[in-house]
Each structure stands twice: as structure tokens, then as C-alpha cells.
Length: 241
Image (tube, rainbow, N blue to C red; front, side, top):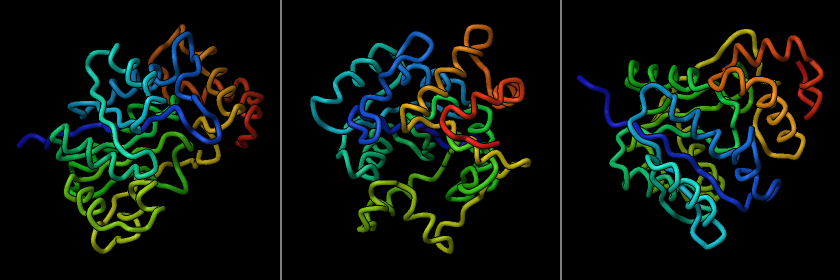
């Protein structure tokens, strides 16, 4: 029996508070969001990609950018109620399973995300994710959950934190939504490979400058080799090995 329709829903906005416009900053010659979506396209096990952006004219650059990519849809929803945005995207794409990766993680490894998706389907769990506190680098975070779990969260959550961050409603109710957590050893959670600050962006740029031209599909192994050869790179944003 084939796996249910699995859709990657990507939250993105131009109005980030810590680093406004970060998804439009250049990375190896094009906007960061384009490099990120290139990696999403390589995730095995997804059937469609949908970018969920806030309502309002400020988000037009993202909408236009995604439209130029051709095969990725866009939905709009409330800026602060990201849970509602995800529910809108799930309904619009007829998703049975939703993959959540945030657009400020242009260094995530598609193979890691694919492993989470495969484990989710194999286990038949309502929720699977990379372990939140250990294992994969910060910035590789991938979550997969059923449309039913998402609908329940959207229907019932009234805590602003649960609505802003999508999955805390599920995490806080493990008896109702038992979760499968994928960990790894050695623990690389101290590597900060997301983009929230100018220093984070500088590190991401340095990694792309070092690896992208020779290997556009670089992943965790290639980054580990780079950091072993150039440990100074991890000092750019205060990451510790």
C-alpha cells in the first residue's frame, strides 16, 4: 500500500524580527530561500512542496520568487498564527502527512529529512521528528505529522506559543500523540547551522562558498569534513564543537 500523500510545508516570511529579510539574502548567487528549496526538492518521500507565507504586501517578494520556481505552491495565512497557516496549507494541498522544515535552515541535509519521513511511515506514528535536544545539528530539524494531528492542534490549541510554533501542542500531549524521535551519535546539536543572526548568515555563506560550486548536493558528511579541516568556521557564530 503506498504511503499517504506527503507534503512539505515551508513557513517563510520577510518580516523576521531578529534578521529581517533573511530568506532573501544571497547565498551562492541566489536568494537563500531558493537554495533552501533546492534542498527540499531532493528529499525522498515527499509528493509536493507548499510555502506558507503571511498575508500582506510585505511578503510579495517571496510569493514572486516561489512562482518563478514553477512546481511549488504558495498559501497565505496569519503571520503570528503559524499553526493556522499550516492547516490552510494542508487543506489546500490535500496532504495526509505534513513535513515541517523552517526556511531559515539552508544547510539541512535532505537525507536526514528523508530518514524521518521513512521512519514516520514505517512506524505508523502520528508524529516523528529529529530529536529536539541532541543528535543532529541545530538547523537540521525535521518534523512529520499526520493531517489529523495537525487539524486537532489547529482546532484545540489556544496557547499563543502553541499557535506560533505549530508542534508544541503535539509535544505536550505524548499520550495522545506519541512521537518517534530520531537521534544520532556523536551528538552534533551544538553546531548552529540555522540562520537567525548576521553571524549565522556569515557561517552559512562561508559553507556555501566552500562547498556549493564543487558539490551542490553537499550534506552532513561534507560539512563535517569541512569543519574538521577548517574549525575556525564554527567560530563565526559562536558554535562550539
